Structures are given as structure tokens and as C-alpha cells.
Length: 136
Image (cartoon, rainbow, N blue to C red; front, top):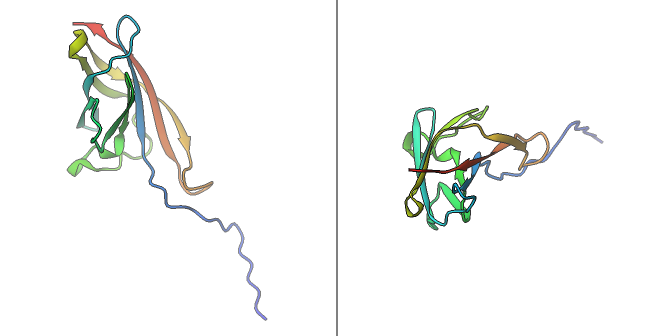
């Protein structure tokens, strides 16, 4: 009889790792704009986004003034892994034409790491940042 001992064996799922940035956008009076548009850059590649946009594969407008951007959609052919570590700073421009407000500068996201496929199966990053618009 043959006995096999497997040490450290783990099972990993195959959940897609999405490196994301969730932006919370506020107007100068603290409100949450229903409509906004912007551009974010990573490593020289730019991604444009607008809310609301229910069909966008590269970002999701989850609530008024909140947009989650899939950073993996940046790069060659619109789909490139951003990589690890995630960028410490991201150039960003935002505009809310209805309110006559905008913002342009660099955001420094706060990142958290998580393991969507189980412990020891690789991790992904989620960034968050808040931007307050200014009158144009």
C-alpha cells in the first residue's frame, strides 16, 4: 500500500483579481454630484470615465458621487495588469459641468490588500480616495 503525505496543500479558486480605485467625489458644499466625468492616468496610460454610465466595463458608478475604477483596464489595448505595487499617486481630473465645478491634481489612494482566491493564493488591492471639487 502506498501512502502519500501532502504538506501545505491548498486549494485556490479562480476569482478574477480586480485592482480598483473607489473615488468619493463631493461638491464644494459637501453634496454628491449625480453626473461627473473625469480621467485618471497610470504609467502614462489614461482612462476616461463618466457617471452615470451603466454599460462601462472599466468603471462602475455605485452611488451619487462614487465611482469605482478598474485599474486593470489601463494600458496597451485598454487591458493591462497594473501590477504590484499599485501606484502611490495617480493624476486625476474631474468635472461636474452641471455644477460648474472641477478638480485637477494627484490623488494618493489608501490601499487595502485582500485574497479573493484564498490564503496564500495571491492578493489584490483596493484603493480609496476622496476629492472635493472647486468652482471653476
